[in-house]
Length: 219
Ligand SMILES: Nc1ncnc2c1ncn2[C@@H]1O[C@H](COP(=O)(O)OP(=O)(O)OP(=O)(O)O)[C@@H](O)[C@H]1O
Ligand SMILES: [Mg+2]
Image (cartoon, rainbow, N blue to C red; front, side, top):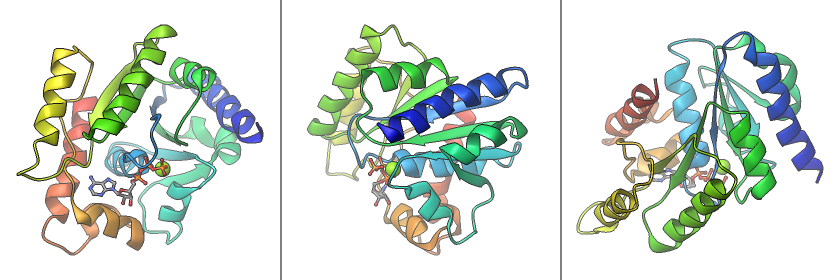
């Protein structure tokens, strides 16, 4: 309950304070945990910070974004909901990372106070099922400002990515063209407290380019 009050009330406050100054607010949310919300939030914030002052609001009580930022190596500010309420209007972009499993009223508030709701999902059956449930909930509360993002797509011979793309297409669900593949570099980036492009390994640049493409698709 405490977290619900701080996170969702603060998001309303951020929207209210930012409305007049034209801040773009993007929220990342999913029913299922571990689908790449924090990784997406951190890398989108990383790219957007090249375009203007960017704030990542850590709305997850696990504080994963704050842990990632703790080494002080990220090129944007990370604040918890309480700090962010007063500061958000000083930024051009605000990205909100959230905890898994928001309930219907959480979702309603998140969507109402955000310009874009990104719903990451991995392409496996269980995650897709949870995502379809979430989208049904969104439809039930008349939310339309959301887009699906496929994440952690395994390399061939797995067909999970292609199967998920087909399901999304056949179901006419709004989704990003950009897809995020599975690369070990993302885990290393979180451990080192840096953006994935800074990691020293073979796939780091390709992994960074995927989120850059996503940010361009959004802008
Ligand atoms: N594209 C990817 N390829 C490989 N590993 C990834 C990828 N994206 C995220 N990961 C890893 O998967 C795990 C879960 O990712 P992340 O923490 O971003 O998910 P989350 O949805 O925020 O989780 P939670 O619901 O617990 O907050 C982390 O270990 C992260 O490093
Ligand atoms: Mg997270």
